Length: 70
Length: 267
Image 1: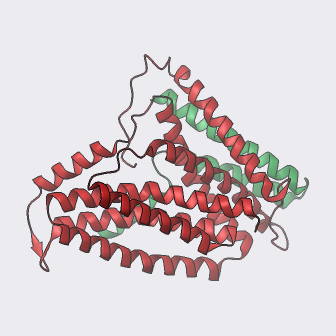
Image 2 (image 1 turned 45 degrees about the vertical axis):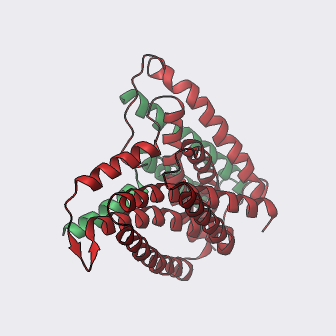
Image 3 (image 1 turned 135 degrees about the vertical axis):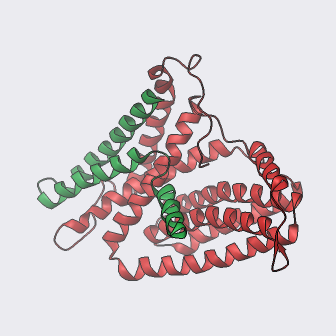
């Protein structure tokens, strides 16, 4: 059991790291992107540019929250 | 594949791997110098064998079971999260809000732990030295393997990615053998900043491209300008990070008055 817990802990630390909000922000933006792509209302290039901007903004927001709480 | 992507791939895998190898070297040097070189190097050999098996299994699974767009999405998202973790830490360190990683201090802490540990022998090896070296090399090595596989598969050139990592490994081993001490003069924090920027840029590019999997046909999405968009993303992440380095201390009440938070558990 402790081996399993250690394995899970390793992958959590490896992928999620010190701040889970980063992974959550990336997942949220990409999920919104998936909805946009599935709806097929915008051309590819517009969706890509929007999502790029969304990822930059989400990261800024996460860091601002992180620093304010420190 | 164009020259820019190949060069970016080589630089990214070399730099990321170099940083990880420096950290692994510090652990092995501490174990070898304070306890037993034979046991420490046996730990390294066992870790390298385990890493080879892990690389084969992960590489086979990813290339065999995932269609291209899904591979871009899964691997790109992981790369992006991974890169943003590095970038976050680099930004916090550059803005003075987090203590910088110090290889000399890490070496001192490892040697102190090694000196204090009980001396148990198994299979003719000093077990503490073997296990710590194995864990250190395996854990840092998994990060290298992850970067090589993700960059290599997505760029369609695993050999170039592997060459970048291998050259970094040889360089660190040669420098470590010559110095017989941790490579404290390597600008590790600056390297991590650069790697974070590259991982975030490539990760953004590939994860968004991979979203094409949700539409009929599953064709990858196209960025404006194709692969040249990676340079635009690199510039955007760089500008944003420099802005955050300046702005974040003010959010916290100014750099001078903000106490530094000690370094976090992971490097």
